[in-house]
Length: 464
Picture 1 (cartoon, rainbow, N blue to C red):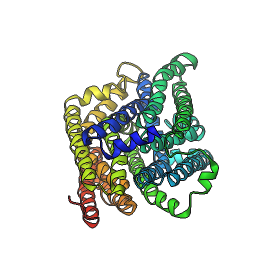
Picture 2: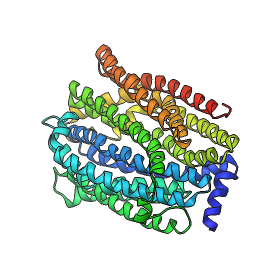
Picture 3: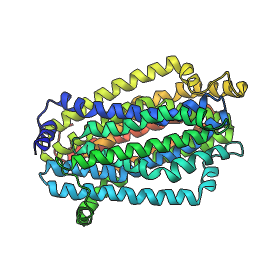
Picture 4: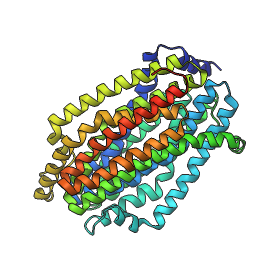
């Protein structure tokens, strides 16, 4: 019980800044390494100077990122409920919820893999694959998505459950392990073990293998944590979860999954519109969508570290402490966002060149791709502060069990503001307008999100 008491002490009594740092720093580290893990394929593929391979990884990125949305269903939904049940002093219910979340993640991963496998080529063509990129995209998606979604989704779900039970370091270690392995295995498979021309296949094998090893580590960490925390492996606990707890899990998990899923839908729309211009615009946009994830990864780490503390104190009734955590996390994230925005304005060209060699392969195509990426990054990076406000507000509502508000925010942010802006601004200003849709749409979404959060806090007798 010693470990369990220490987690309650962290959530309930440790000074706010220290508690947030304790939970957020490991999460930020894992987010950054996981970011490298997702970016390293594109980085090494970029060493070939092949813009069409780069475009193919852009197309498949949305399929890979859907793993994150599906893991949120049972990971954030289950993890948030576990933290709230801990705050309410109901460890037995928390154990049943955690077991249900783990087995639910396995089931949904298998269904997703099957559907992608059955309709792979039509999906890739819908996402913007051309004759020049379809073969490369197929190679990557078959291994990473069709064969590799189960360990990927399960790893992310286990990490959420561990983090919300107070085991942030263990969760971060597992995800970080996958990123480090991918950095090492990518060049081995791409440039040593497989012949030239099979770089995309090599990157896919390295990624899938890294996912499997990371998943194995997290399963072991989860098994150890069950001795000290309200977490469970037992199928009997999953079966005994109860309809009310399933409803509470889904009330947060479904909006969280939809939020991430709609973000992926927005990226799909970006890809389709960019591909309609040409493959080089698509490749340039793909580079930017990877680079701009640096501030996003840091800020999501801050928000994920904040979530269990907010959830615990919301349920325990210590709203003063809860508001202090929310405020501290918001200030920290905004500082990070503005700093990254300034750096991208200054070093956009260097960041773009880091992802695509202009001295190998088709040099003219590579130079054009880097030019597009530089322009797009300077424009899209303006969204970083308001994008953080959207993340922060959404995680606050998830922590407090406000699934309806989270879902409403997700729909309005993407379907009312961002996606329509893409089509309108692209039609008016071409590819420059497409890039500008992100800061415009995110700014509108942030205003709406803050209004939702203020209304929720007032309705629950808390101060702004």
